[in-house]
Image 1: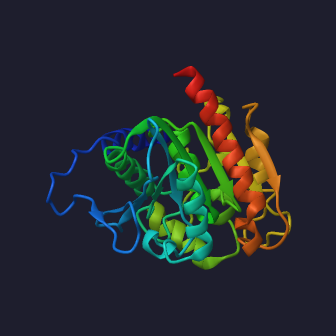
Image 2: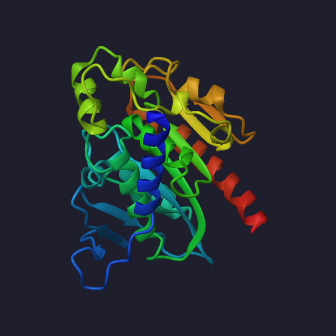
Amino acid sequence: MKRVALSLLFLSSVTLAAAPPTPRLGSPDAPQPVAGIARALRFPHPLGDAFLLRPIKCAPACPLVVVSHSRGLTAEESLTRPHLRSLFTRLTGAGYAVLVSNDAGATTWGAPQAITYNADMRHRAIRTFAFNGRTYNFGYSMGGLPALLAAYMPVYPVSGVVLLDAQVSLLDVWKGVNPKFREDVRVAHGLSTRAALPANRDPVTFAGSAVARVPLLVAGSPEDQAVPFKRNGEAIFKRATSSESRLLRLPGPHLGGSHFGATFVNGMLAFLNRLERQGGAKS
């Protein structure tokens, strides 16, 4: 009973956070242009600012990609990384608006505040461009947790999820050997040292068959020593039932430079474009 009540409370708080009032023009929460980055907007937030990168034009409307980051990174730092900027440029050049999320902090590991933060930022972002109604989540490393959980709750409609070297088994972290990561999870999720994970915090064991129908692009490496691909990427892909889901194996270590190269980016765009064509045909 306690687990059910907790899940309902989580869902209720997420639903409420998904539709906050739109900030008034000139208010401290209103989006601001970003110096040096064309068509970029900063969305202020006490838990870290998010950034929206918009295409040159939406013809007639654009989808949105919500990006969730790796452990220790922030949205603002993401914009200084050449490999990420290159990826974002490819996405905006292909007609996708890109919301670079802060996930409510650098070490939130898919905790409820990260999910509600992303819902808030998405709500604010889609009011600043011609939005076609379709949202895709992209999570790399730790960002795999909020990317999947936001789709699985569901906090907002998600047409597909892209995962790169993604941590999607929270239990793997909570019971793992890295004390820093375990402490991150304990603090972010409000747990005692010996507590069991609350229900529906781990995408790999998430209850219900509906979640498996979300199309996934799962990219990662069997050589990854930081986030074991078998217990994370491959495990979540085995649960996927959508015929549009794809598994992309990459060589090399966790978040290796080649992982953001043409093989992944081209595969990501092919996956998104295919879903966009299907979504457009249904509109």
